[in-house]
Image 1 (cartoon, rainbow, N blue to C red):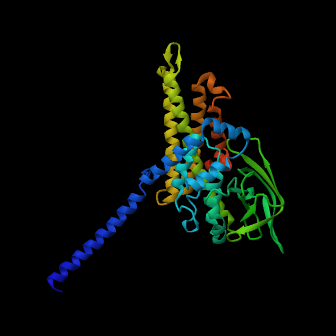
Image 2: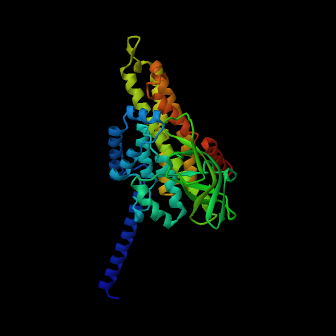
Length: 400
């Protein structure tokens, strides 16, 4: 080999090595935790400005007291803002994005206390559908789901315990039929499509059923949280469609529960952040005993505790979101359970202290503080509640 050829070979090898190092650096840059991109900022600003226009305190109270969901606003969120289908497959009309983006939207909706099926449809139901790998169902439903024309939820997946499956499925000449009961289904009374985890001879399987199908009896529940409705659903030989492979429903539901719990933690971060801001402003303006109450040491300490709790909630929530999108960072399941433990306790603490800091006005029906507190308390019980996550943390960390 000539000196010239040898030099060219070394140069080529050096360039290849630099290319590989550059690719590695680019990959590392993509998964730097808590580094929000410009696109993330644009998404946050878009949703925040929309919430400020649409979800005024008066509108929240109007929808909450009516016991309904603002489906017009949901359609606007889908067709005008284009964020409802963020995590749905791009080839079917979705955004092809991840849990980080779902969490950003959830945080902003949480700040506004928007009465929308973001957790039940965009996070829980959509993730279960995508995780099933059923291309036919995805092609059929994703366009309408992404446009906000349809909503989807998941029933029968409230806990991660196998014996919690309370619906059975049987097949006959007319197809699959579901029989059984599910409890506390988020937005179960209004969802167009209900995904159900049911027992079959081949094991737990995922089914889809029309919300208005014969044999489906939906009962809205009177819950503590007026801004997010739940329902008990009874299935009496209701016609259903198998989604994905028979016997593989538990995996899809487990993934959906973890994603929904993570996105719910982000919503809790928004709830806590809003109440911290509102309480801080109140402490700056409220005068008692001839002084602004924010000057009293006890009030300062309470606000400091609220700020610390809010930061913890947000950090844990986004760590879980990043772990879902980049599993090399941490175990997504463990990160989800930690996020739920921190977020549930933190949001309840912040909202309770906000009510206390507002004094008499904070306890009134007219002040919105109680709505945020009730949402925080109810959120802490969703998807099995903190006990399920504490048990998983114990198994993964203590028993490991």
